[in-house]
Length: 299
Image (cartoon, rainbow, N blue to C red; front, side, top):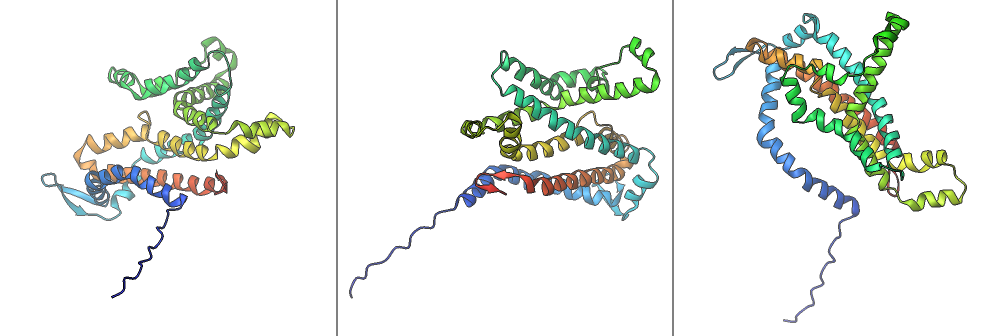
């Protein structure tokens, strides 16, 4: 027999897109494993509970009720719908304000200035206080979460001069500013990371061509950080919907655990709330992703 040379097939090299997808799956693997092991069953039980009624706590025996729980929270519960509408309206109003404020502050902090490190830390301190042990201790001692996040008050002298209606309007504006200051720390850090990732050669070439700062912002800065804008929009929506001082979150918790007979109603409220937040995030991703630029062109 004659030995024939075996031609080796060239190995296929993964494209850059497939490498990035593989890297993403590797980083997501621990979360996916944890989701399958610890969360899938509780999620399934919660969905089933929202369409059922508990007939026996021992063994968690449920009886199918269809849409009765959803009809109850929409047509008989006098608190859920008003709280839901207020939470949604506040989130839709606070999110763009928070994104614009965070981007402006990040651009300012990205410039060379005296005390830049101090100001970067100062804008992130509310995040540490609001989500850490200090806030839990303050809430545990009886402090109201809404009072903590609305700390700017109109002085009584100014209130007497402006009148009741103007004072309420000014107070609402100040409350909105306080909420934005409390909730913008993470977004500022993400915007800073995105701004520092933009090559300085792009700005140098634009200046040589005679571009102004305003033109460079719209033609270079904004397109280059568009992925960060999308990420911050989704993060901000989720942060406002899941905030500990959110009245509807507290209401769902109390309805679910204060009375065992209300477990099914609480599950229905939770899934309506989650479905709307999920749909809103999906809508934002679907719309904003059309304007996201990636390396090599428009995605």
